[in-house]
Image (cartoon, rainbow, N blue to C red; front, top):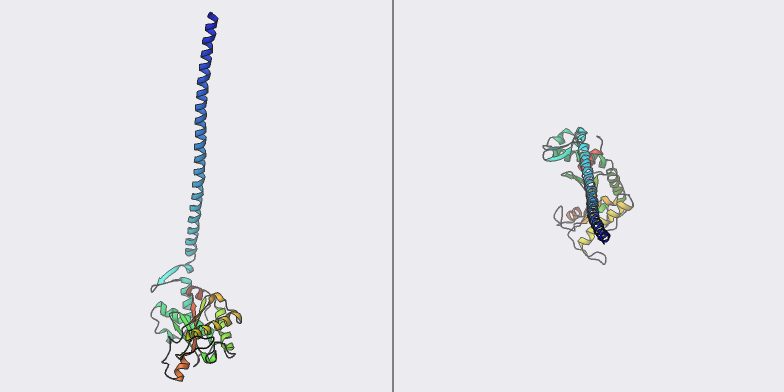
Length: 276
């Protein structure tokens, strides 16, 4: 009987010891899993932070590279003169161009913008002079570095027509040579009519005529003379931008014209030109 009691007591102790150990084991296992989960989460957060930091470093590096590219060469530094921002390189090329300009033309140049107008005028006129001669039918004007070439419609179209006549080939070919030689130019072709009304099965009014004339010239420059179409803009002004009053045949002939507007990017313009 005594042995039985002893065995029962011993079994109870062993069971208690086993149960306590298992409970501790489960607790430790739970803590381990929690630690693993926390570690995994922390690892993911660390990787995300490292990725974000790498992107920030790349942006900073790219920004510094851009800053360095502007400062490593004195010729490429940007300077402000007379409220205009240009590169030193552009400024020097402009000076070289102006050295070839008639001194009388420079007398009225007060600001840098005035000098730019004269420099652009000189270079484009030099390019145009071998191709387009100014006369009663072709005029060239410069305004705020924009070059405007006005061509009388009698060189381009028959009366009331938007089909380009053969007489225009020489003029347009020479014009295309100038445009193609200068990658920095955008070119706007403007059609202008006189005030006399027009209405035909294919032309509703002067708006229609002026636009069709502009697009006819634009297509010809692109397709026949290989001008990049991305540089071309076609527009029609109808009769609402006359040069003179539409009160005589002579004046109406003056108002019937196509205006070619050359729009240069100044930095690109001077960087691509050598002094003439």
